[in-house]
Figure 1 (cartoon, helix red, strand yellow):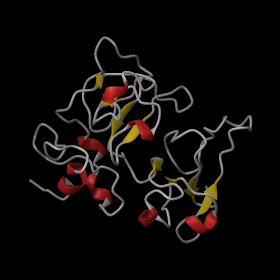
Figure 2 (cartoon, one colour):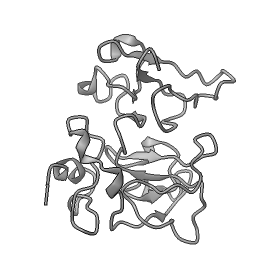
Figure 3 (cartoon, one colour):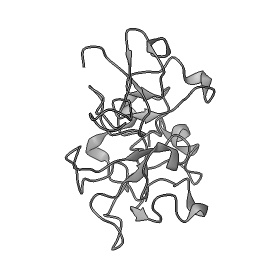
Figure 4 (cartoon, helix red, strand yellow):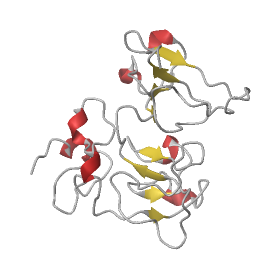
Length: 194
C-alpha cells in the first residue's frame, strides 16, 4: 500500500495510519507539508466509526477528542492536527458523512453533531497557529488561521478578520474560498478575490 500519509496521521493516531477497509491511506492529518493527493474524497470510508463521547468539553477527561470522536465545537477540542468537521444549517450539510470516518455516531448522535477528523482538504479552515503558539507555521497558507494581519499570510493572501461583535456571523462569518466554520472569533488567510 501507499504509505505517503502514514507519518502525518501517526502524530494524532498512535495505532497507525488511518486507512480504509482495503488498507489504503485515505487522509492526512492536516499537516501542511503533506501532498494534496493524501486525501481522496472517493475513498473517504475508513474502519473508524463515528463515536459521540462528549459535548461542550464534558466530560473533561476525554478532551481533546481523537479521530472520528465528537461532539466537538472547534479545532481546539480535537487532538493534534485534527479539525472539527462541522455539520450545520449555515453550511447546508446537516447529516453529512464525515471524511475519514464511517457510520452515524450511534443512537446518542444527532445529524448536526460535529466530529474530529483529518483536514479534508487544503481549503477547509484549520486553526493551526496563534500569536506565540506554533510560530513555525507562519506565514499561514490559504484557509489557515489565526492571523492578525496580512503579513502573517503567505504571498498575496489576506487576513480575513471575523469580528465577534458584527451581525455578519458573530465570529463565525464564512471565509470566502474556504470550507467549514473554523474556530469562533479566529481569523483566517484567504485569497483577496474570494
